[in-house]
Length: 113
Length: 111
Image (cartoon, rainbow over all chains, first blue to last red):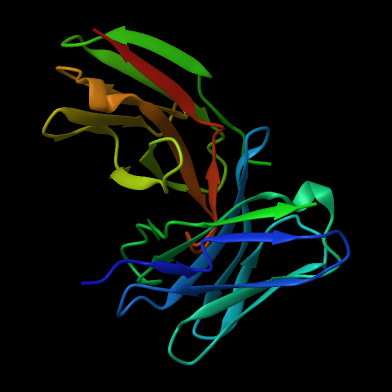
């Protein structure tokens, strides 16, 4: 089975711009979770989508949003980028019911200048 | 919040055994995950404990005590390739789509 894929792998943006990141889960997985990883804060949960609905949400501002499509692929969007948004953005997929082990994609490294 | 605490750094010698501890808040707790993350790479799943006790998987074992809010990851016969960050994560609430991660323990294995 193919693993979790994320595109793009690297992005450079400037303050005030917006960005959309994409995640394709493992086939058959219906849950997609998004995390932000920075050296200072570690891995922090952004939100989780299951069957096209946001099921859980972390403590991030409304500039961070996401959605999930009927094929379980997910996107996250960050509007009005700030320097502090520079981070590795990881998505993880799981079955969503029962065995909740999450499998991570390679991440998108975002640099905001 | 559900704080997950683990040591920041550890150093061990090739061939030795190392234990990485993790404490967590027990309220609403479902299960405990351990992930390995090499520098510049994504976390990879190591183990998942729901019940008390020790689970062994080759050179790696993970232990959970639900009543004490305590877990550890035991790595035996250390190899240089085990140098990585080890992330402890707790699942809370009705679903486990939102794992709460500790900040990771950076393990350095020296010859």
